[in-house]
Length: 202
Length: 346
Image (cartoon, rainbow over all chains, first blue to last red):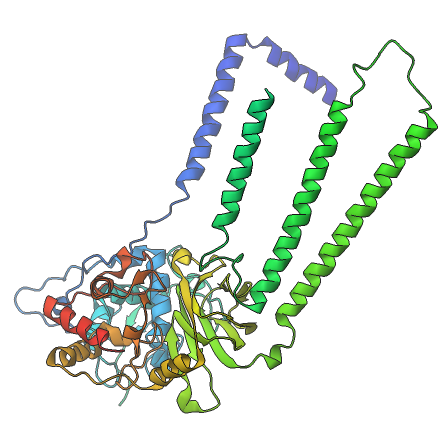
């Protein structure tokens, strides 16, 4: 039966006029070349920026209170460009250790400082909130890093802090550590739904 | 015909002679050994090179001879020879057997030579303790820590290693991030710096001079600009250098230098760099306690001049794109004072 089928197939093939076959072949060639080009485009996932672009944050934009003067209006959320770049979140992870953030926050689990990998945000989960936390400091221990950390590195740190509770896209969040993992990698962290929390008791 | 062949031969010979000459000198050259370790290696290299060249020439001569002694076109018409003459067969067999024997002997000589050279690289390592240096590879620079039994004599510097002439120096090799490799061709072979592991190598410089080293294991974007200098100097000169390095940094003398120190301590610099004798004590970047005593900055990338230093501080990414030092937006006056202060750190 198989033989018969095969025979029928070749028969059908033979029935096609020469021109159609030629056209089909060229079409196949075009498609394969196109697929090859598609592979090439995937080689450059993102553009690395080694020189720091001007910061999108202004610390005076940030208000911590819900009370606004004048007419009520939601402030426009500030986009952190580092949220979109895998290189930046990884740099943030490196700086988190190097600038000794882990000295108080440990690997995000918290110790002397509050944990960063959970769903609770005392001073807000938006990029601008985290930015002002780093730059201005917070009561009861968080020092101000104003002029100690360049702006673009603060942005990288902000992106990394957000990736700790799964707030970033999975293809942007850092992957596993080179050393032993104390926790799941940021990439594998499930997204926590942020909620406001009161400051820790003094 | 013969004349053109002769000229071609002459040109080839002259060219190879010139090529040989270029390899004789240089401060980054394995064929210009200035220490026992590098001498072992270069001896081994020359043995391999000479024997292989002789064998190659002999094989080529044999090939040409066999081509010349061809016995004309094969005669198809005649019946194939089933039994070659006994005398000819014996000769051929002897040639093959002797060639195989010589090849095996040569390979064994190579094996023994390379094994003994390899052994001599690490032989009696525990007795080569004239000086102990801990070398840590970073992306993309070298951290150098001089060990001593007296803790007050321990100090850290970067990218420029001074050693006394004629004294075996042991290096403990570590890595902070990825795998690097320590290679100073004039003094010793390569040895990898592996995170989480301590490798040891010793070397000795027999002549005073400056030798260039280079990272020999691809370690990222700026692997090519991860070089170091080894300065071999007489013992007294080395002792004086070492004495100076163990001191804390000089206190700023002029007002400008004082302001420079304040700029250093209040800006981003302190997050990564240390200057002994000041509150700056981080260890992410190179230790700057005696930065002005070094000839080069940025892992032997640029000469340590006032202009280079200033440009490096403002935008190091133009020299080494991707390096870990951020751009710094300092005002002109601040930058001038900062550079003045750094230049005073002899």
